Length: 361
Ligand code: NCD
Ligand code: ZN
Image 1 (cartoon, rainbow, N blue to C red):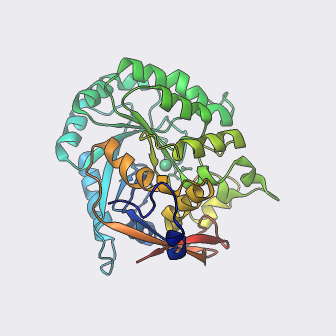
Image 2 (tube, rainbow, N blue to C red):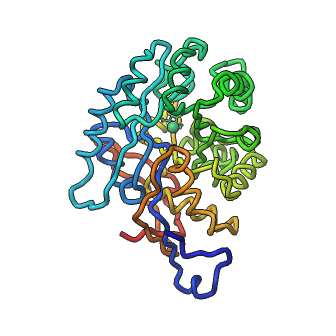
């Protein structure tokens, strides 16, 4: 399906103030579990046909059996009154001890769409992550043979490296060696935040793509310190300076199919964020596609949104493009100050502010 926007916006379209898009996919999402999952899942199902579901539960999703049960809990948690069809695309959590047989089983299952590489202790629930990717060589070789994508949290877990440089250093120390050693391995460089990552993706031929979040497209690192310390703008990889922010926008609107939508919406309770040692993660699922629409509109590139949100990710993962559509209208609405999150509350992105695009059910 074609979006209503051709290359130029006609005055008739502006009068209608309507944006119809092929139903998009969220290629990077944290759904959590149990009551918390029930609270956040409807926001995603309303907007997206599919989502790549991160495996960083506690304990992590290590096997196909665990992932299958998790996917069943996700499907069971979709409210009965939501008639949209939603498919969770499951992932497994890579550790130093992941076995080749597990990769083969995952591929054969048809429900596992990627293996997530968290450098150990780099982010939320990554304690069981990989201490040294060299330990996973045989597994990566199998993934290359089986055409199983590697999903990468691209930051070095080296405390000596400045937190703002961890992505850039990761490219040189870890990612480039992987691409050389396993040229056939499909890699998704998740939630990129730097111009170095953009350049690397553009310059590397073949099998490597990247997701970009809405919050990294909307903010630079000043947001974390505006008038005081702002824990709800803290995520990993951390927001970067304006030059990187601009590079990300340029990549997203470029029409290069290697860049596609992944929200990295990562809900935490208000208490876990507003703490002496607050968690990393920003919740955007309540307004995900609307936020991307704002970015693309501000950049004068609304006509590029549909491919970024609905085509390129599916194509990269080798999935069929979605058939249904969603409708956004240009109508301002106020984001609540907080949302229910199981027995707790969470503070959504843009809490207390208005958003200019609204989704119609
Ligand atoms: C994510 C989370 O909370 O699970 N946090 C985040 O800041 N993005 C983990 C991750 O993707 O790094
Ligand atoms: Zn994430």
